[in-house]
Amino acid sequence: MKVRILGCSGGIGGRRLRTTSILVDHDILIDAGTGVGDLSLAELALIDHVFLTHSHLDHIASLPLLIDSVSDLRQKPVTVYATAATLAIIGQHIFNWVIWPDFTVIPSRERALMQYREIVLGESVRLGARAITALPAEHTVPAVGYQLDSGAGSLVFTGDTTVNSSFWPVVNQIVNLRYLLIETAFPNRDRRLAEISKHLCPSMLADELKKLTIDAEIHISHLKPSQIDLTMAEIKACAGARRPRMLYNNQTFEF
Image (cartoon, rainbow, N blue to C red; front, side):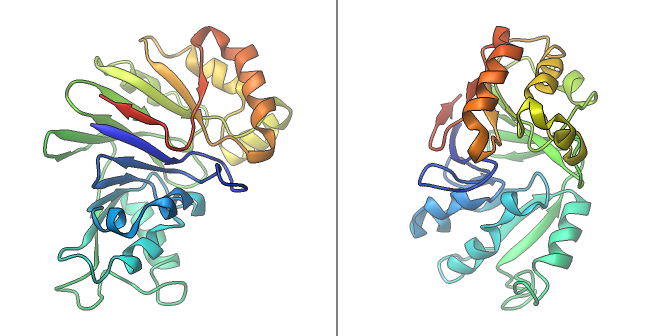
């Protein structure tokens, strides 16, 4: 399994900042933030599956444009996987004919360009030898994280989340865990904002990582563009024993 980070920022600004999206091999997206826009048209046309962590704009911004852009290049619909609550939100507020056409009925229900598939917490979707499992997340809207399992190894992406006691017992049972991608959206001075918006700051991250009982490389996502250096310095001070690293656009993981 090859994982390429298309975007991992908490915002935009400059050539290196793209919001959350992860390309798995050539045919799967985990979230569809602005990083998707850096793919070529040929690469976009190969995407068969999109797994959404939640409905916030920085994680779905490119999804409507993706479906539209490849509409005449594909013979089968793009399948969008998410919880029932997230699918209901994007159906009501995005693919509603007001913000964007409803591609689940275009050009017809029988030959739709997009189809929804509901997932539930703990469910694994198998695509060939690959398994993608929805994990608990705690955010301001219904949300999940994902485990990507090749058989030889696993990568876990928390998505957007705050303190989450139900997440760690599940992760600690993943015997082939290689990589943990975890968010930290705010510096410590904005801890109250992190709590209200259900994100993490470095001191909260440090407390959460104490619950991890197995070894894994830890990479930090969702840093706010104007606060990257400050937040990473605070992470080093608070959680340095775990050696967390900043996640970068176009970083790849193979396992």
